[in-house]
Image 1 (cartoon, rainbow, N blue to C red):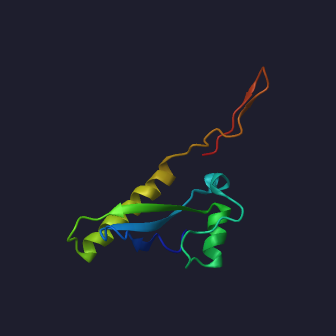
Image 2 (cartoon, rainbow, N blue to C red):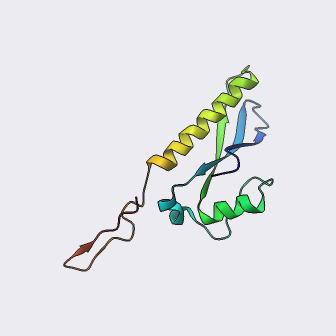
Image 3 (cartoon, rainbow, N blue to C red):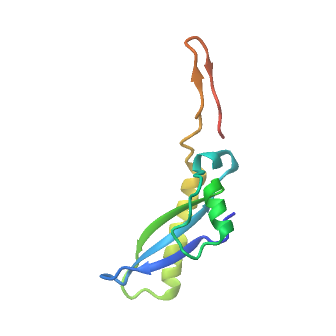
Length: 117
């Protein structure tokens, strides 16, 4: 599980209603090797060594995203927009397995099908 879910990086200089954020999502165990990237680090300078280890190992997926907030939104509304953005990201990680049959092979006669749940 990621230590945090949403991290606000900054607001756009030309549009204070547009935020750059980092999203961290939990990756299902069966897919962690696909998300792993040796030496990967968070875009957020405040990430701990353990955060970066989790990202590099693939147990946590990170996405840098841009979220535009309607002008005049309250802090509670901004928080809700960002929470919804994270929920959508976590759902994408959970519900999309692009590697379902990664490593399946055919030797010219027989298929060996791998199921990476």
